[in-house]
Amino acid sequence: SSCGCRAETLGQRRFYPPLSTARARTMHRINRLAAHVIDSSRAVEQPTAAPVSSAPSPIVATLKAKIAALAKERSALKAELLKHGDTKIQEVTIDMCINGARSIKAMVTETSDLDASKGIAYRGRSLFECNKVLPKAPGGECALPEAAFWLLLTGEVPSDEEVRQLTQELHSRSAVPQNVLATLASLPAETHPMTQLSVCMLALQKDSKFTAGYQQGMKKNEYWEAALEDALDLVAKIPVVAAHIYRRTFKDGKVPAYDSKLDWAGNYAQMLGVNDSQAFKEVTRLYLMLHADHEGGNVSAHTSHLVGSALSDPYYAWAAGLCGLAGALHGFGHPG
Image (cartoon, rainbow, N blue to C red):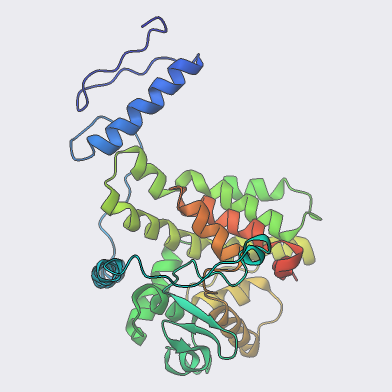
């Protein structure tokens, strides 16, 4: 062609021209999309990128197996429900549309449910029941957030041993790259904490396993595993980043040492440096367990789902949700 753009038969080696013109950029994008959609089952040369994941640890393998089993059940349920796809759920009025889709039943969220009188339930269990049945820290009375995370993902109450292994898995993923901390340090200390957190989440995005896998031609039925890997990395790193933000914004900037002998929330409480009491660790565990999920209709959760539906990786989706959470009508994210 006149722009010098050439692409060989799908499945063969490709030549990508310099993206110097709008036409070249368009052809390049079409070539990539065609390879992904039509030829994802073939071995295709791709740009060098980190592997989506190495062999998972035993606890991650167990977690994935449970999620896969649950997904199989839900797929069967979805197929059954679609047999009644013409059934009307409700009437929609102009008032409902103009006032922000108020009271319109249009979303399905399985992990949690918000009832106006009963409050939030995780997988059908009230928060009171969750705090009662979920594993706790040694000597503690408050359920661990890691246990709530497991319940939300699998629909099952984890054993003490499963939570212990999950906690260690999160510790093993908690290292925050120096470039991310350098990015944080470059921001004025008076920058809103939610802004600082959003910036750091986007700075972490370069290590997304989902994006690396997608660029390598990952199959559609593998998306969820790569997204889970990103989610585990995010859950592991967020407390470290948040502690740095808290200390530089409200204290002296010095962050107490990471303690991998503690649970996920207990270590976060330790790094905040408010005090070293067990009571503060317990209230941190309870607070984070109670806020582990909030259905799908609020601004932050809905935004995360919407951005993720475009196949944006979890880093992008979570950062977008944070920006919604930072709004005045969403509580400014409770930065203090």
